[in-house]
Length: 227
Image 1: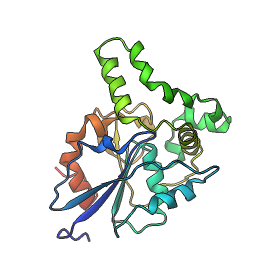
Image 2 (image 1 turned 180 degrees about the vertical axis):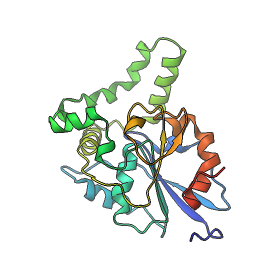
Image 3 (image 1 turned 90 degrees about the vertical axis):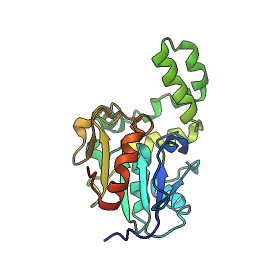
């Protein structure tokens, strides 16, 4: 049983190529929780996902923590959890095993098409706004510029390859999965056994932060959303 009288240390890992400021609007009571943001490391040449997870674990400075990952960060925290004793493992807008990956990703993996994905386009994201017409596209471009700051091609190539080729056959027991029913990156129809955010998209940790501020404390402490 969780001790509700002690400070719970909550470590967040952002999505692929994102910086931790995607969590800037997530607020948890400082009487009960302490938030820690983890930043992406640039992978070493030919570094395995296991080796990378162990390097990320070196930044976990407390025992019995809560580990939360978004999107590809959700995959990474699952690998990290294999070498930690956790209070709670939570993923958001992510997948728990290979069968939850969308068909296009599994197809790309099976056909060896990863190398054809033009990841270098991230280096030119500043130029996207020149072609963004209308308020919606301009706002979306500004979001990308603000949050997708990890432009290192070696990192992005490594991340995409490890996401598409992730070989996890069964979900980790006890994992908590929060997913939006309008996620187009990891479509909801492939996801089993999650806490559903109605109307939630792949970037809901940013644009639905009020939902997380309301329900995340209960999810952390009990594993359930509560009222």
